[in-house]
Length: 482
Image 1 (cartoon, rainbow, N blue to C red):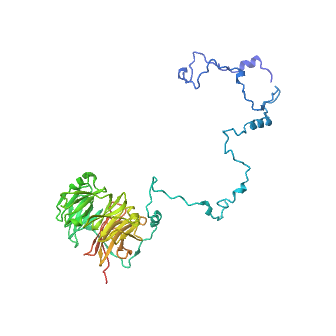
Image 2: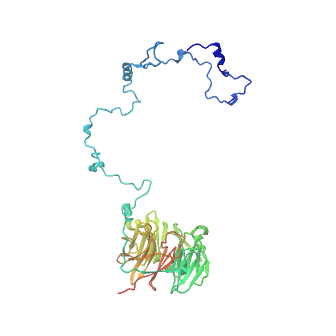
Image 3: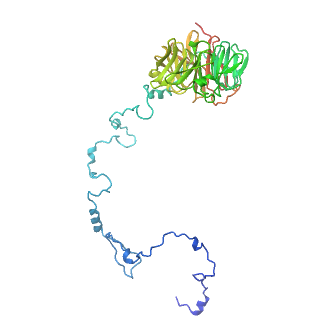
């Protein structure tokens, strides 16, 4: 290219100066706002070229390039020198060496024999007997964690798939009674009236006549006491209500159990048969019960040697307790308080969910929603399971057509079915006799499912009453033929 002439140089545009003058405004942050990213160098740091040379000889030989050579540099590795460095670090004293010292990569793997699981090819069916050559250790119940009862949990788990009892050849007649409203909680049968607890306490004539409101508050539990009824309210109060609608509060039970009225809605009551018409007991899940012989005027606290898990329905009065020696039944008999330890069959049921206890003379029935039903014919000394009686949510005992019966309400959640199962206590045979099926004419309750919450058997009228969120149901068996 020819050199530029002075004329050509004058035609070039003048470039701006590299350094702005002090008078011009500088862009960007002020010096005071800048934060150093690195600490300043010390003044005594030696930056001469000799101090930057490495002291380690890696065996890399770099050949000098002449000024006429290409910009690319060729690096020549001295392989022999590198191998000599590697041999120097292969001693047994090297503690940082990875892997076990005795590992021999050249070991004869043929001595290990055949693989345990056989071929890895898809479709092979090799036996796995040799995978575990010894029995697994047993669990120690003394170690922390859940303990195992004598009854096998495997058997309990299998109950969930147990089939329901067969259907009876003749189903019961089912009818809905609209007099009691919806969202019912409890039932009790008196000499002349049926007591129904829900949003309020009602009494119905047993012959299907009038319906009266006896207490204008929500009631959770009931127990008849002669012509009166004992009612546990949602606020935790204990009321004695007469058939005429008069009521009086019984506060002495809370003091005997060391409870405050506001925190005792879990009260359970039961008529105390040995003490007469004015005797009953009150429990609240503690190790004591309060017993009165004077209709509630005063109570005596009694230690029962375990936590009261259930107060049984029916007669005689029985309690299910759990103490340091395991599960047991307590019964007030002629000789006083009698204790009977549960056998493994009954213990399995007692440890289940939603446990219910019922008594009918020498017969004891124990049921849990997830573990089925078992019964005893010898006052609780031995129990036998009744197959198929899962999903229990309410229980009643009584005599029908001259034979002792247990009536179990079962709610199958997976199918949303509310069933009634009758168990012949003499033979242990169970069958489904009815199903509660609310239709469009029946008002729905607050709960999503319509499981029965209480049952009561009226032997004189041959009628089973059931209380549920959808209301009061009346179930009558077919006519009995000898």
